Length: 331
Image (cartoon, rainbow, N blue to C red; front, side, top):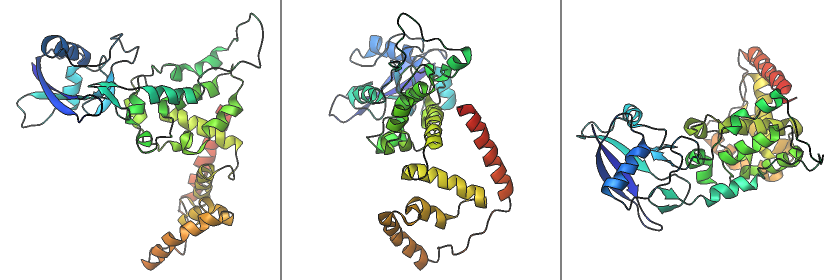
């Protein structure tokens, strides 16, 4: 069958252009195989990265039909089934573009320096300085090793980084790939720097609190690492060690849970006062609430009363059961 491949072409500091290439393909052909044929048969100037061709190296990640994926893993049949193209087009279409959140060098090749720099920022190496035992391995039990299995599947392909909405609006955020690697180190029984790591990962929106929980990293990860879930595990480690005065981000989580446990849902009046104003301790935060409060009053939207949820007892029991389960897992 014939398929129209629309590829975004550009060089550094130039506007991208969309080029169309038509190929006779088989349904089982991978996108990488199709790109190879375009380069070999139609346009030798097309630039893209590749290496293993077997979903191991992560080199060939690009945006295929609008979401980041490995070109060696995705095939024509799946792409056409999930993204059939325009009804008025005489040919089935597959669009290919470079990764997001990274500057383009040429065509589908992007500059990965910020990706690697942010990985380096989480100090992604096991620290064993406190266990200086000459000529011995640091042994782990099967259970200790199993905690690292999922994170260990990461191939550093950049798909999660490309789709990260937090990274798009906050250039200081280290990214889901780095924090997934960070969680692996927090969970590693051989590491001796857990407390220092958690302090580092707790730094405002640069670390775990920069995650907006949009789920895009989980959705596109080809190895099912689930970076957002790993970020959540680091947050939980921090929350068990810090009280509500640790930071506004920590207070936000703790106050939200406490209010829901108390009333079944959030009392928005108390939420703003306790989180932003820190129950009156943060004068600047309290003052910052005044304009919003006045607008709500003027429009008759300020809730003077709070009614608890009829199911608050059930909600409380569910939260407490989850907290107990989480506490056992962290021990």
